[in-house]
Length: 150
Length: 135
Image (cartoon, rainbow over all chains, first blue to last red; front, side, top):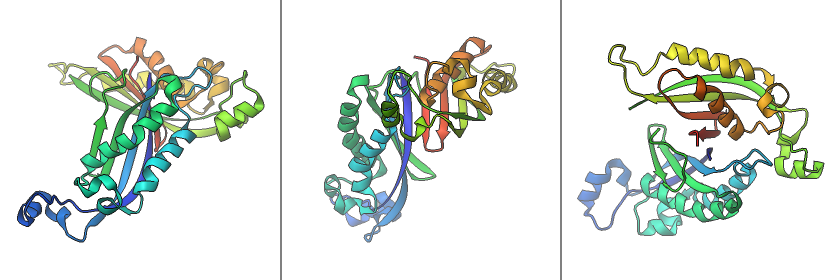
């Protein structure tokens, strides 16, 4: 089992705000990310798939297929969009990078695992850098072969 | 438990081809990577070793030893080489980043004197890398 990671980039706007909190609480919890007019980031996305190497090709998954699925399911939906207004799930959920990681995982898991079913492909990890100083990752725990942390 | 990582770089050429495929299949499956004249990359290898800190030295292992091992076993074998033609492991196996990571694990694991080999990461480009944990 090997883990293959590919990096992608997209730019999007968002505002961190929870309607259930008071205006004062929102400002306290989210600070400048609560600015009513919103703000944006250049996100760096890492998608990690895990599976067995196909002996006929030496590959875990076709990179062209991976790029196609990520472009169609994620980049076209998120790039140059307002996450709060353009994404159905973020009308009710705060578009933090944590939630965005999970959202991207959920958008990608079925199409990737279906396309790689022959080789038991698993979407292992989605890692997202909001800026070069913050990153968030969701590790599925479904893939084997990852010993401990690191 | 502490994880120590050492990085090294090598430059090599390769192409992807399966002799059992027709020329058309090879082009379809491997795309521009199937050009038989080869093409090249600057690869980065990260070797991560896990272990306990030796109380006398404060170190998990001597990084100089790891650097030399990497140089002798991997860099000397692959740097400025045509992987398909000059690295025996790839005589009958595509030198994909996946297979390179597994091969580097197999080269280093039996030779590591201290600590346990935890992970081999190979970057083919800054936007594409493979991790292998030995199983």
